[in-house]
Amino acid sequence: MRPTGREKIFVSTNLISSGTTAREKVNLRTPDVMAAVQEQVESHYRSDVVDGVRRNGGIISVGDVTVRLAKQFGFCYGVERAIDLAYAARKVFKDRRLFIVGEIIHNPEVNEQISSLGIKNLTGRNKQADISELQPDDVVILPAFGTELSILQQIKDHGCQIVDTTCGDVMSVWKRVRKYASESVTSIIHGKAEHEETKATSSRALGDGKGHYVVVLTLADTDYVCNYIRNGGNKQEFLDKFSGAHSAGFDPDVHLQTVGVANQTTMLRGETEEVQRRVRQAIFDRDGPGEAAKNFRFFDTICGATQERQDALRELLEVPMDLLLVVGGYNSSNTSHLAEMGEEKLPTYFVLNASRLVSATEIKHYDLHEKREVVSHFWLPPGPVVVGITAGASCPNNLIEETLIRLFELRGISREQLQVAA
Ligand code: SF4
Image 1: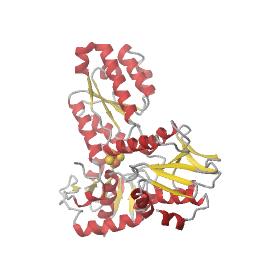
Image 2: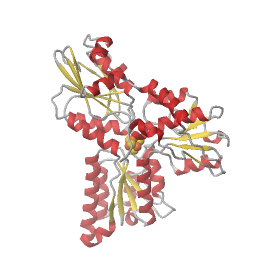
Image 3: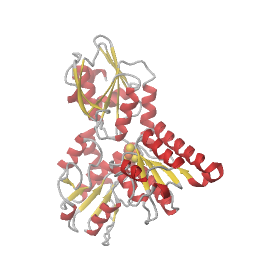
Image 4: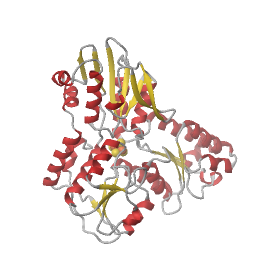
């Protein structure tokens, strides 16, 4: 059985991979380090209120406000492990410079905490240092979604100690696309081409040079690829359409002959299944049943935690509710899919944290279609109200607690009253 949650902390393996220079392996998970890490992580991210509501079956009612929590939400095992390892690295390498490749996870508050530990970001929007500045004595943390091979090689070239927090579920996607590449099968990756995980996966899809990939985000992208598989088309138009989302030297006339579908671990399961179904049908239509079996591969790589959160929200959405709050970082893929699921059923507000609940008549929230934060008014109906709350795999419980408390405060119910009820 896959370990989940905090019990994973004491599963001990060699956690630091060596660079190209021979480096001793260091086990970060010694009992004393992990006990200190556990205390520090819990002080940053734990919530008594959320724990209390969970013990009450996920429901809390005070006055005329009822909140229902999804059965599964918040930090997944991969995120917990990554955060634990980053905190442990800080404790073990007290006197060394620590860096991280991008954001450890997609949550600004968590990333600020990591930054406050003196861990500097090497890439992305909040870059604080450059890979070229690295020294052999430096320690570099790889985030939960992994990193591209080219970046990994640069870090190894500097001889740094590497703390690899890549989630095992992400690594199993890499294994799959590497296998496709070894058999000259092109990977059709369902994901966001600019997402760190998909970039890391794409780099592995090249294999030792034989592999190719194209990334499809939507069903419309998929249909375009399927149409090309069936009928051919304008090669340059294809390459322009998937600019930045295909391998160098990709030729749709050659590299769509034998394909395998893989996906970013945090996509919507139903959509990924549809991508797979449509591509398989296109190959079937082009090649007939005998050849299609040879020219199409598929492997489900949606991770267990993403699946559990989507299933739990689906169950929550079966209960009549007035609105849904989805809490999490706006660049979090799995959180945005939860918001998509909510939108199909009821008014849904994707909020970064409690501060976005400005008043009972104003809320700031991320619009998935406009891809920016917007303001909505009169979001909280007067009178008895039932509000669902869920959160993505990168959202800590303390942020969910603050959102829940803010919601009740807007209806005149104090933090203290709520803590008593929870
Ligand atoms: S969302 Fe899934 S793949 Fe990503 S870190 Fe969590 S468990 Fe791993």
